[in-house]
Image (cartoon, rainbow, N blue to C red; front, side, top):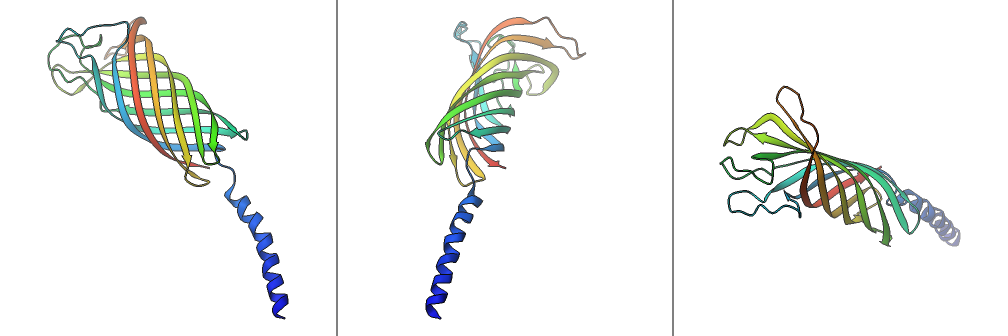
Amino acid sequence: MRKLMVATLLAGATVATPALAQDVGPTFTGPRVEAILGYDRTGAGSDVDNDNGNDDQKIDGLLYGVGAGYDVNLGSAVVGVEGEWTNSTSKSSRRDYTDQFGFGRVKQGRDLYVGARAGILADPATLVYVKGGYTNTKLNVLAGNTNESTDEAFKLNGWRIGAGVERAINANTFAKVEYRYSKYEDAKLRFADGATTSEFGIDTDRHQVVGSVGWRF
């Protein structure tokens, strides 16, 4: 009887082990959502030198937002598409009316990003990847020498590239660290009445170092 019980338990364990493995499921596959937090810096591009002692060369602050995407695990590689909505506390620090990297006194507004990424699995739980895509952001014009935003804003169009490392905490949760560089080369100014100027050329750089925590479905 005792031998029969031991044999039954061993057989049950053999059946249960593959079942548990199936419950864990593959990582880096399927839809995902995430919360984003990090450092944000926007400034004059490499073709612009306005370091004259009067103008801000940059605005920087805290970046925050949300992202979503869909990944496909190809075995040793992962490819996917993604999008983001972020905002930032970055704003002009000077209280005068000098020209600050070409936009006057502004506060960083919302940023929209859509793109793709591709990476390789350094180990079963760690993804190293690169990314790239389109970004559209706003610089809200500040009222006089205050920190209050007006109804006028610059809308900037550009491209973004980046690289990062994602770590699977378990089958459903993950954490990421990422660097992104954005280049804006075209802009329009939207006035308070809704009218906009014609598109004009700019040279504006943006650097971000962010961390993310997310959930994979």
